[in-house]
Length: 602
Image 1 (cartoon, one colour):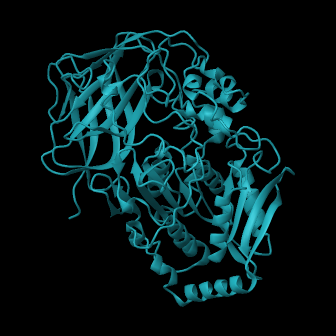
Image 2 (cartoon, rainbow, N blue to C red):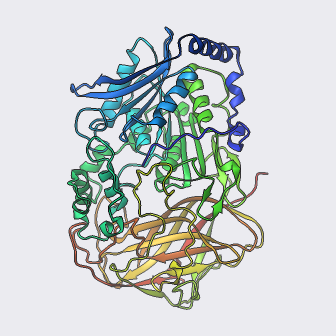
Image 3 (tube, helix red, strand yellow):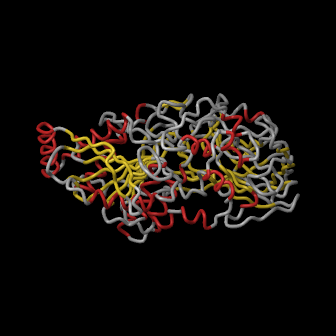
């Protein structure tokens, strides 16, 4: 979950047209400020201060590096709080860039990481340490007292926790690919462990970055019991044991939750994610919650959303696998951040508070569109029902999707063996990868996976005209199993005329947590139950002759831990049980995928 680099491209890129960089010099105030900064830099240059000790309220000191124009003027401040260590060329480049644009830039190692004192444990200190850091910055003679925060992934989290601290000095944030509450997606998804979170923890074990390149992560992820994965990584990771032990939402997770508290944080936010970001749910949930439930009307208006054709490493790739999204895929992210902070920290009238609230990249047609809300207001949610003659196994079977409701139809059956799980493509590295590493899961081709008999495949007829499917995806599933607990997975794909089965997004539900992870409810073997699966969001223009496909199975490994089908205590077992699975799609059990169909602007 690395701090994603800001790629600064030309102002002619498509996204810059929605947030014009030209507005930075719109007013005399903006021009005068830029001229003063240029004069100061020409005369005095940039002042750099390294390993500056920042005291916390419990007397622990954290380490910060500071870059600022050597001027007597009080400056607005851009703050980054990272667990990935601040001593990198990337942060030096960004610090100098912000100083050149009239800001002080502070990058700080969070507690227990890099040069900071204390012990690192994910999330529990970020609100308090963020509050103390903001207060320290505001008291410095070079600070105007107006601070903005930016960064991605865990560095997006640190912004959220600082925001809920209600610091009067935090004026705006730019959280990119920030996960939701930690038991909602990463490291756990409603009772299901994301196995890569163990490797993520190992990568930030101790104060320095850890090299995991010599480890066979595939073998590690296959180890049982799940609670022992840290030992397979050669480490003792207390947080991993706590995560595995706390599957239901309890006081442990509640202490670390931020999303409900964020509704009264009163901080303008520019939310950024990608269609192939593994923790996309955090960005979309936060934007929707803040624009519909925030405590003040002003806060609801001060939210903006950008979703690009990116993986977790945002804005670094125009091509993922075999899919090229075109030159417009890479945007002037630095310019967008600058425009945002110029408005909220410097008071420059550059229109960022009056432009479209939502900027979306439409895959397929490879274009950006402006909207005023998410999900898009003119969306029509269309049910595509699952059909078959009882043989939907593999893409060669008889599974179909259509708008016609089912009548009398035979159920589909498959055998789920936890020792041979269905693979999830593109995820055998950790989430703390550098920008130069493999970009992770994306629009992968699942045709070979769809030849497995434990994958049910339902495919629509070809589209007769270009069709925009843009919004949240959900699956209503009626399933029965021979086990007292199992998992159900769903994947939505775009099937090209030549057969390429392009992944759009995925979801999973653990049966014992089918009503949420506040309590566990085992199944009666053989009894049909209704399951709702959140399949994330996408924005794809299905061209003529393309087809919608839905895959149903019971595993997506190693993204998610396997359900061993015993119904026993999660994380501590090694025994595996084969489950006989049935998917019903008849008049009384109408299973379907709910697709967000969007009409063009009128």
